[in-house]
Length: 198
Length: 136
Image (cartoon, rainbow over all chains, first blue to last red; front, side):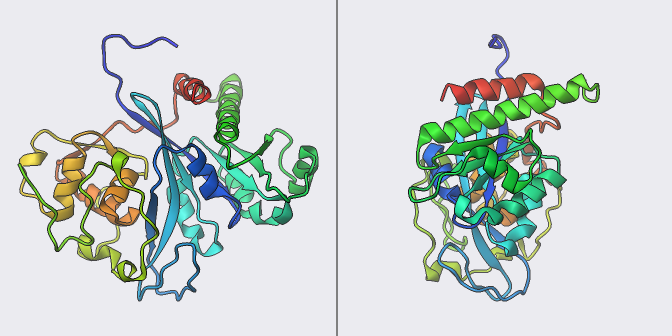
């Protein structure tokens, strides 16, 4: 890569969304590679009564606060990569548009014991034309599936990458991020080839 | 200019940069009961649309001398180096939506400038991201 010698590069921040069902390992995944450990919160603005659970959800009179997984990776002096976990519970689906807007791509984590939990995320990224891949998070006790089997079960486009990962291991998480950026590049080049972008 | 967190700020912001922000446990029950949009005067929609969670904000040169209070001042101080909306939310321990409203006000008032927001990412940038991720 050529470095810009004279001008200081303007800082750029890009974002990747980490999605998947409740308890699939999004927090672990983000924590494995992020250089910071905070959670960030968002407030819900309805008067809906919401049950309390031990992950983050807070009961309020008119607002509910949900904790979102949030990670940051400094890729170089002028390039920041942010990871945002989408809330796993359906009732926070309203936050997705905000979080996904402008994302480089998305990673859908999947637990083969609860395959169906990732369907809403897959539907969302397909509908919104966001480059995504499926990361099969291998829990210790989980039955191992052939990746092709997983792909068939999900019914996703054959071009959607399906990769194995261990959300606890930094190297593995890094591999998934690399696979996603490759996928984003592939899609972009295909688009350029089709004459729509450049 | 010295500035200490005002006790009326909700809640008091940590005085460290977001990068150095200490790990904190999930809020305790006491902390949780607050009305997040109190600090925005009840407004929940930003005056300037298009602030994403990863939008970088930079304080304008004279913003630090402006008569800003509480969270607004804190945001401007943090944005002496570019900060994203999400980083500010962590530093101020406020929900993203609250920070978005406050930051949008500051943009509208000329105290914050939005770093160029790219529409479709250039190919060269995506390649740079890939190369940097693989070098992690």
